[in-house]
Length: 402
Ligand code: UDP
Image (cartoon, rainbow, N blue to C red; front, top):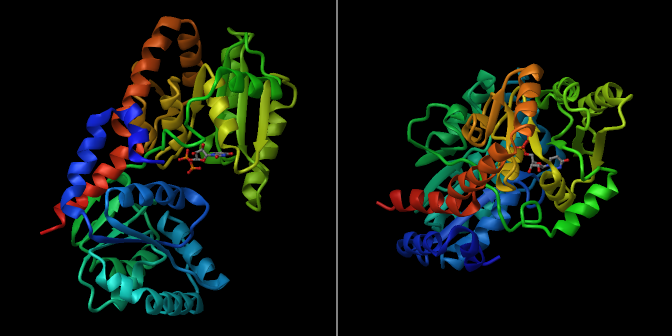
């Protein structure tokens, strides 16, 4: 994708501004480092951002640190502990972590030391800075997870690697930890030109409806989520059942990834299947991980998108739905609060009863729905597209220039 492809969506001004912001950075060397090239939100965003930064004539590199399986066991444990699980990490795993990052530093040191900016994504590569004594550039620790309530011993261990950075970036202020350098907030974004979000022909949406047995003449509620208790799929079924007493035509889709090796995912899926057993109008869809166009079509087929999470990080599914001009009924938590404004882009709810009430309200107010549709799309255009995220990275780099 080229920058000019985005102009059609964002307007030329936004693209011109990116070019202007990038001017003082032209020719500079930037290195992003994370721990995977495929899978997960970080890799996905880098896949899009790196070529756009290169197009702005910033000499941008993307390096991935690698290790044996014990290294990933350790960093997975960090991930869980930083998000609040009280789990100790075995000493031998910590030694593996230290050894692996040191080995990766050997390989990457020449590039890292000469870079003008280094973005280190998440805790996995955090110690690299300590192995680059002759670094010339600014180092930024880009944290993509919520570390506001970490398991303290692990945070104490990791923060010593992070403190010497020039700055940190968090997705939401609520996710941050106090650190002895400047902290920036840069929320996530979606790519409007990706398979997940690109405009689809109505025929493609109709084909997906047909494939899953959805009746186009009846109202449809959709929630796209992993089968996870925090996403409250049982609460969604309850809300649907309550609303259906007044709207007997209602249909519900709960779509998520297939039964993975996550044992809890399987249990939650079974609970959901049990709760839906008697109702042919509840469609539980298990989708393979690359079902981006299908998810896109389901979001477009919906009249209302639900994201009734009990706890949520940012909630990209909300952004995706708002971009498709759908009102969202979302749980009053985490990043959903940044996106859903009552009566404007949707409704925040705390209970199935609240969700049912809002479903009934919206389906009886087609004009209100149409108004919200326009606001929702504009809200995402202004706040949550990849061009905004790129602008904020550039602004951060310019701010650190001196
Ligand atoms: N998603 C997907 N397949 C699924 C379920 C979700 O591709 O079966 C996508 C969804 O469209 C969104 C992301 O995974 O882009 C989920 O991000 P979100 O922030 O909503 O929740 P998380 O899963 O990170 O808690």
